[in-house]
Length: 341
Image (cartoon, rainbow, N blue to C red; front, top):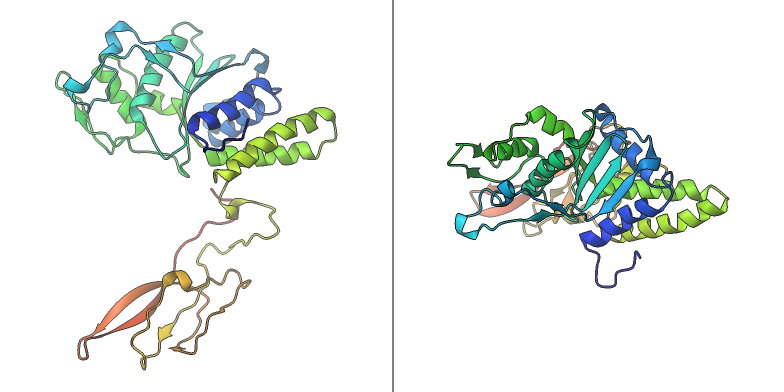
């Protein structure tokens, strides 16, 4: 567990994280995960109650109704390449008292809108029709993006219904239009409320926080749990699935930009006596909060350091001599502030 000499794929990552959630005590990982989801989507009213009734299923199989088997293909797939699909297999299904999560986990930036649509449709039929009216269904996408995905990136037109899908449609809009193609009608608002997204980077930070939490406890159970969580964290760190370092609060080596205006850097003008040198943007160091300094040789350059902006590089031709001079023009860029996401 957590050791994969030939590389980690999405099934390894999914099985390790949600597998731990399945077998560790609920307060060790399941409850913190639900609290994380609630913190990201407070308006969904997702609560970690009645966890003794929790059921965690890895790669469960659900049969597709006969009337949908021919239709469960991407709408932009040519007719001759379509095939009947008899089952769908979500990565994870989480059942709680009054709540069901259908999880599609990707170890990439991939957003398969058609998969999310199929899981939403099967989820409604499988879990909402057989349960109480106030039962909630959520479709959750987990991938390595840093921001919530929006576009479906699919273009298709259904000849029978006339429904047009645009690549710029959001995921809820795509699900809404695909359902109409199959004769099902759901409101876009309802679908939007059911669609959740979490990054593996969120989960990486959660693992980091839980390891620190259990290390501070001296009881035997915490030591036992911390070994599993530490293995998970180290695996995710090796894959780069941790927050960007500027978001790691409490790091003694962290540099924090507090003014949210710009990062101080240098502005350099080449010596006109030597028109041949070029400036590599990657070689110009940033002066972060006064903690760094310029270290390269500036004897060949004439100019001044302006610690208020970041340089943008621009080439200005000399039409009289047909020679190229390189200038560094200052401009401001916005940066992320401490504690932001």
